[in-house]
Amino acid sequence: MTTPSVRPVLQSNRVRSLKIPRNAVALLIHTLDARVREWEIPPGELSIAFLGPRAIARLHGTFLCDSSPTDVITFPGSVEDDLAGEICVSPHMARQAARSARHGFAEELTLYIVHGWLHLAGLDDGTPEARRTMRAAETRCLALLRHDSAVPGFQWSTGWQAVEKRGRS
Image 1 (cartoon, rainbow, N blue to C red):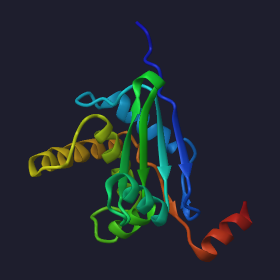
Image 2: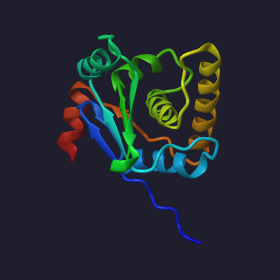
Image 3: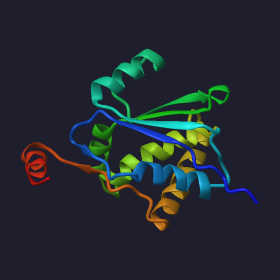
Image 4: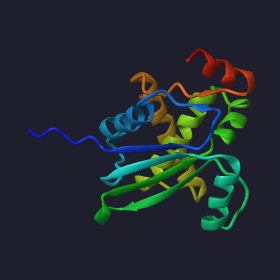
């Protein structure tokens, strides 16, 4: 029996206030890849980009004709080029949404990554029925990630906290 290969996961953090634990995003993706059998994303490298409000609004405007900030944008990859796709998420939107959600910032930002992963797996949320399916899939994936302790410990640092943390390093 051959061991399945582990997908390369690249991450780009363009948000200075966002702190991402080492290898946490790769663990999240590898857990979804290994444990979620109902949906699979294409093989190949996966890119996760954490973007500020202006950058994600620019992408939103360029590719979806809506220049307002958004929570997540997913771009499919190319099997021929061994690229699964790219998931662009907004930590700023997650921070705002977490204030009214029943979970914290780390779970909200994880939800955005899960949402993008599910889009790459072929799920859509363009109709009420598709949205219900997407929400159920998100709930199942988040429960699985919680169970496997694979929800990254994303943290938001601002002002003096970021300076203080840098000073102690």
